[in-house]
Length: 336
Figure (cartoon, rainbow, N blue to C red):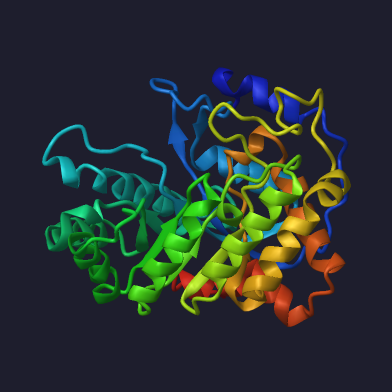
């Protein structure tokens, strides 16, 4: 079913040159995608205004890649309109649990969507955040963790809330466009070694035109967080707009989508550095859809990731880790 509000991005994606699917049988867990309906409130300006069960299922089917499971990533979707402020975020987990149930019906294809869910909770509440976490867990057996910011001072109240993640075997996702926050994230990971800390989107905004000084600073920040054994890196998000900044391959900047080879030439060294810093056993490729759809189709994106893996000479065991195994371990998923 075509939705008028999605027409611009779908028409732009349709301009791409079709690519043959690389290794179509390779099992993939997509550990980071969003779902939303922004028709009533699109303050972020994403071109894909509606992205629900049918839209993501269509992207997966059209891609030709073997996506076996997915993990939903917090995005502020369908919060409750009433009730205590700190509890309203539970509405997102309730919403996504319904999408997971729709997917389990098999009516949308063989991929099992949202077998893992991470939403949010305000850890600044300290121990008082516990009812929020338990409400998420009650809302869905697929709930696996939260994504939130962290205070620079890592104060005791925040750390008391953070410690509850270990109590309930929950993970902590984090992303900031400012990679200079990564050393602070490393301090947090070291204070709570029992919590899996998952770095999103290569640790910050990836500017393909960055100078040597910025790239070296990013590498240093990556090294700081990679030194913590309880951290995991999501390899992706380099193909996205951040705020008002748009990369050269964004649909507002490029007449038609780039192919995977052009992306490979532009971004390989960033992916390579992060992958080598963390190791394949602590890395997972992510789609970050539909945010990254402003720049690349789902099928071309996974072709890019497979080309990166092959270019870097990953073994079959290492490829199994970055495409499914690390995600399954980090989010406690049961693979077939």
